[in-house]
Amino acid sequence: DGGITQSPKYLFRKEGQNVTLSCEQNLNHDAMYWYRQDPGQGLRLIYYSQIVNDFQKGDIAEGYSVSREKKESFPLTVTSAQKNPTAFYLCASSIRTGVDRKETQYFGPGTRLLVL
Amino acid sequence: DAKTTQPNSMESNEEEPVHLPCNHSTISGTDYIHWYRQLPSQGPEYVIHGLTSNVNNRMASLAIAEDRKSSTLILHRATLRDAAVYYCILLMDSNYQLIWGAGTKLIIKP
Image 1 (cartoon, helix red, strand yellow):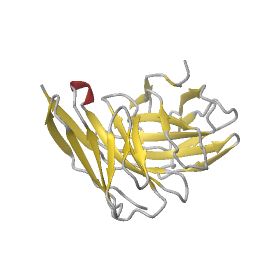
Image 2 (tube, rainbow over the protein chains, first blue to last red; image 1 turned 90 degrees about the horizontal axis):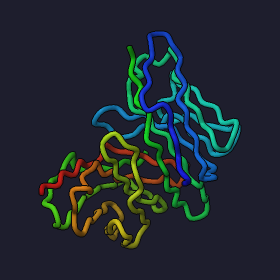
Image 3 (cartoon, rainbow over the protein chains, first blue to last red; image 1 turned 90 degrees about the vertical axis):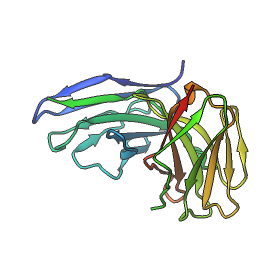
Image 4 (cartoon, rainbow over the protein chains, first blue to last red; image 1 turned 45 degrees about the vertical axis):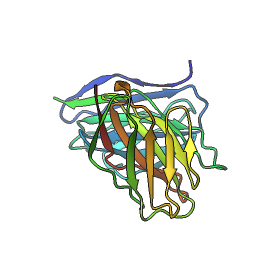
């Protein structure tokens, strides 16, 4: 079945450690996104990518990095510079029609990151 | 950036209609209105979207005010499985980004 997978479901990070969250999609979508969600809050955009080998910062990119070497994959690295990384991280993709601007996003199940 | 305003929470009885309001007074003429919902510890799922006209699909209906400064998501017959946080979001025509608010937590009482 087509969809978006994120792994792991839970991730623990030690102080000063970089961790990488995986996001894979087999929907053949051009655009991919990373969001952060804190308890009781809405989603905030970290990074997004409209095409392979290109990505842009969202509203809260500091302390995070991404790469987009393949259309299917958009991994997110939470660096030690991110001082408050504990959150629920969501990856999404969209077909990116660009013509009718429907831009429906499909989300993965999320990764919960906890700092030890 | 354009923003949306929704009530923090709403309650409804099972098998009754639910009307979830959203204000977006700074919407521009070409911004689409999207609704998503999120169950606990899951990723959001798309519900419906529209531009100017009212829209219906198998999940819900979307009623958009004539001036487009507000909209209402209508669940015609709520079930316990509809208990979720509902987000009213604008798709900005300028950069194709979705601007998320805090959403409305919908509580369904049996």
